[in-house]
Amino acid sequence: MNTSSPVPTEIDLLAAKPLARNQTPKRVDLHCHTLASDGNLTPVQLCLRAVELRIDLLAITDHDTAAGYRQARDYLSVEPLPLQLIPAAEFSCGWRNINVHVVGLGLDIDHPAALEAFAFLRTARLQRAEMIGHKLDKLRMPGTCAGALALAGESQIGRPHFARFMVEKGYVSSVDAAFNRYLGNGKVGDIKAVWPGLEQVVDWIRAAGGVAVLAHPLKYKLTATRLRLLVAEFKAAGGEAMEVVTGRQQNDWSFLAELSRLNGLEASQGSDFHGVGLGWGDLGGIAPMPAGCSPVWQRWLANECAKTE
Ligand code: AMP
Ligand code: MN
Ligand code: MN
Ligand code: MN
Image (spheres, rainbow, N blue to C red):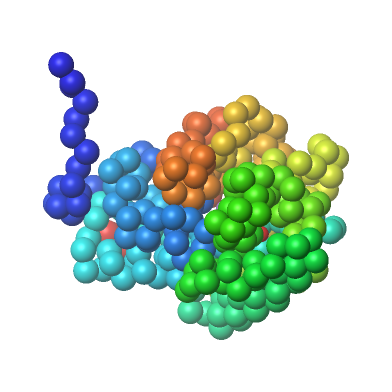
C-alpha cells in the first residue's frame, strides 16, 4: 500500500493555517533563486514550494535584482501564506580578480542605494553579455548574446542563459559542458571586469539598511589562506555575516563555523536552490547549523515578536 501523503494542491496550501507569529521558525532558507534571475520557478511557485516543505523563513536572493522578492511579497500581501519573507538579493562583485557573491538581507529594496546597485548591476550584466557574445563569436558560436537575451526576457541575464542557448543550438551537449568548456571559472566566458568591488557592494547593502552576508565561501575554491583573507577583508569592509551551511556542500561547516566565530560574523544558511530538475539541492535542504554560531536570522525573529507586542 502506498502510504505517502498526497502532494498538496495550491488550494490546500493557500488554506494552510498560519503559524503563530511568535513561534520559533523550524526551517530557514536564506538563499534561493526564481525566474527573476536564473531559477526556473516563478516567485509564487517558489513560495508555494517553501510552504509545502514547511519552511517558515525565506529570503529570495535573485542575482542582482529584488524583482523576484517584490513579486512574492505582493502575492503574499493578497494571498497570505504561513511564510515570512526577508527582502533580499544576491549581489555580484569583484575581489582580487575573482567573482564573489554577497547576499544582502533585510535591505529596503526601494532605498536609493539599493536602486543604484540594481541599476549598476543590470548594466554590468548587459555589458558582460555583449563581451561573452563576442568571445563566443570568435570561437564560431554565433548569436549567443542575442539568443541568451531572448531566453532571459525580463530576467536578469546570466551565464546560465548562455549555456541553455548553446545547448539549444547544439554548440555543446549540456549546460555542464557549456560551463566546463566556455563559461565556468577561468574560461573564456568568465568575464570579471564589469563587477563593482566588494566594498562598494557592502556599502550599497548597508546604506539600504541591510546586512551583508558573504555567500557560499567554499564555492570560490580558494586555499584556506586566501579564504581567511577574503573573510577578513569582507569583515573589514563592513560585512556582518557569512553563510556557514550552504546547499550542495557536504562537510566543511565546522571550518566555516570557526571562520565566522573568529571574525565576529553572524552565521547564515541557504540552499542556493535554483529550481526543480537543475541538479541543485532542494529548498530547505540544509544541514543543521553547527553549535556556537550566532544565527543572522535572529534579527528578524526579534522584529516579528516586537510587532506582535
Ligand atoms: P552569473 O550569475 O551570470 O555570473 O552566472 C553564475 C551562475 O551560473 C551561478 O549562480 C549558477 O547558478 C550557475 N552556474 C555556475 N556554475 C555552473 C555549472 N557548472 N553548471 C550549471 N550552472 C552553473
Ligand atoms: Mn545562479
Ligand atoms: Mn552565488
Ligand atoms: Mn545563489
